[in-house]
Length: 341
Ligand code: FA5
Image (cartoon, rainbow, N blue to C red; front, top):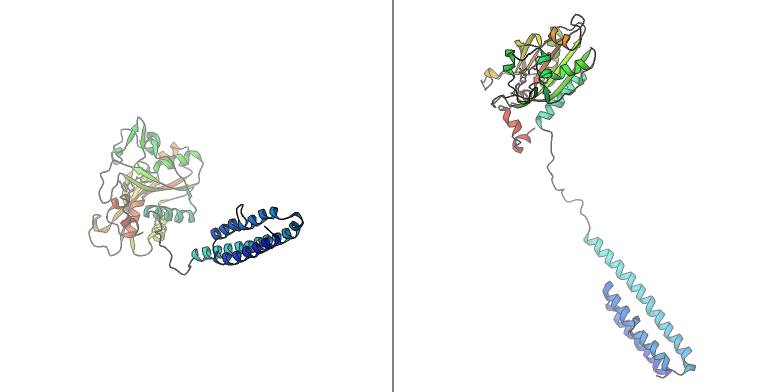
């Protein structure tokens, strides 16, 4: 090759570049361009190879020309690469754009079970009145569930609490009253507690009975407490939980661990309709003054302190509040029912 031919070849490559570079619009095309001009078999490289065929004195001048060509193409290629990348990022961002004005996707929110709502609300009412929340085991011994509450083995009152026995001397607690004994044995008076918890009885399920249900026990032991204080607390509680429009009825009852004993019924005012609970009255709790025998059993002196207690049915409170006619609805986990609360 002569120096003139090489110079002409340089011009041709420059023209080829000018033409080819206009049609490269994406990174792959730019890379192909790089390979076809600057790659091992590229057109610029081929002209460099031809340099060797020139007479030695012409090589320096031709080399300068070639370097200039290679420089031009290299920097044009870099510019092209940068531009194509910018365009690629731009179109990716455009494709990923979020429209924050579109309406959101609705996801259903879970909520607390109605019995949990009622339990928490009752705890709150009594915490505001200065009571602490205590708890005890669901699997109890015969001693705490019965004996310490003045219900010895052959006592006829045991029939009121038909129990699930696990093994000799152990059972699923039939009420939350054993927590009274545990708390009093662990601390001196005064005592002011509420204890929520699950209870178990071999009761046949019906509209107002479930073999598993919840109670909240209340116990207040201090100097000078009387039945009048119990009545006051009951009135405050029913007013705080139900508000106006409900009536309370207190009547005599019997429990071996209280003396005197009472039961409390509630009904919605104006509910003359006789539902499963006659005349709308529903029994919500057993209550009474703690029997001296129980105070003695836990090491308290019944001459010094007196106390009162009650055991409240949580499901019954929920039934009255929302007009639920069958207790079994609370345990069926039917979302159509539960989502109403
Ligand atoms: C008791 O369980 C006594 N421990 C209550 C008590 C405590 C009296 C402290 C005195 C002093 P009773 O068996 O009546 O009492 O139950 C109390 C309340 O629990 C009932 O009024 C009722 O609201 C609820 N209850 C009882 N059995 C069931 C049941 N199977 N299903 C749903 N609720 C029940």
